[in-house]
Image 1 (cartoon, rainbow, N blue to C red):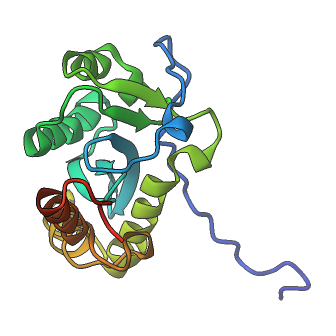
Image 2: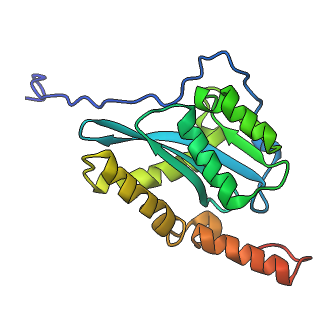
Length: 211
């Protein structure tokens, strides 16, 4: 049947989450010159989709680049600026960031829209955007989304948005942040890695953060 091309070829529906064809300002990529050596230096943001029986739920997330910790997220059946703002507002509430934090995202309209940019400017963020068509500029958050899909989303058959709203926050807060080990964090979970950094710096402010 394969030789005669009689096999059914499954179609995988791909959902576009980045719309960079918009009239808003595009900001330069600030990441190459700004490695994160402590929390609240660089925040990275992205959006993905989660399939349910009758459509999709969209997830916006913000990670702290230093610890890979998910510090803000939002879920919605609409992919718009209010979704990205939901994640940003959660991150602002949980972190109370200092002035000058780099906020890095793709060039999507959800991050370039006036309402989102105005919020960043108000809190004195430095705005950074990935180069168009370059996935490596946002590789850490892309890795997080792959982990979320592989270790949570694909293991459950979500039927409704309520299923997503119940399971995804649990995975982010209780599993990913608190338990999942990262080789880049010396095989510690993000929350523990941050706690160790803060403890080491309080006790030995002149010593390197982690070894």
